[in-house]
Length: 242
Image (cartoon, rainbow, N blue to C red):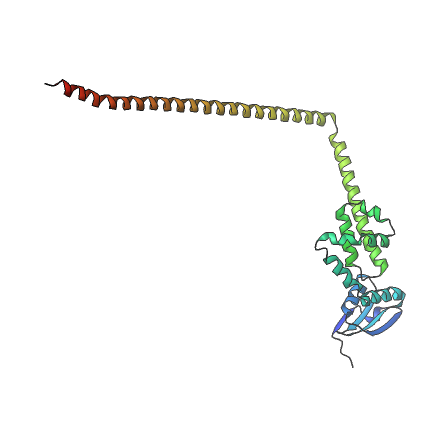
């Protein structure tokens, strides 16, 4: 008897229209995760190489679609293709597939913000192993939430504009703008005056420095001339002696 160490799903007794399946697979965990995400009533016992599955027969097509997807290996190829892009933009290569699932032109999705495009593509990847209906449901949910959020933001902006578009508030805004402009002008004038003061101080310092250098040079020349005259005077005095 095969030992199944893993159990997943709901109690078998709660499942209506029971259908059974037993087959070999090394991807049983992927199957039960996809079934759970898809909201399909099921009960599963599985190991590393086999699964025994009981599910609601009303979802037979969905279950078969999930099993076929998991068994195909296409999901792993999809992930490799995304990883080759080495950044989040790799998800955008799936935008045309997302458009097909949503039955909408890809140009319509490209007109949406890039963040929303990436969110749609990432959601598509997260639910890729599920049945088509579940993928559509999740993608529609992303679109609906974002459209509603955008509408709420626009409505908030409209109400905020109406609340602030009164004569009193317009006058206050105009006064604030005028005060700001005067502040900018005063700051510019202060900056100009400080710049002029700095330039004048620099010029004055340079003048004083030049004057000091000139006086020092004159004093040095005077001392040098004096030092030359002293020996000459001494020599003349010696020659005058008897």
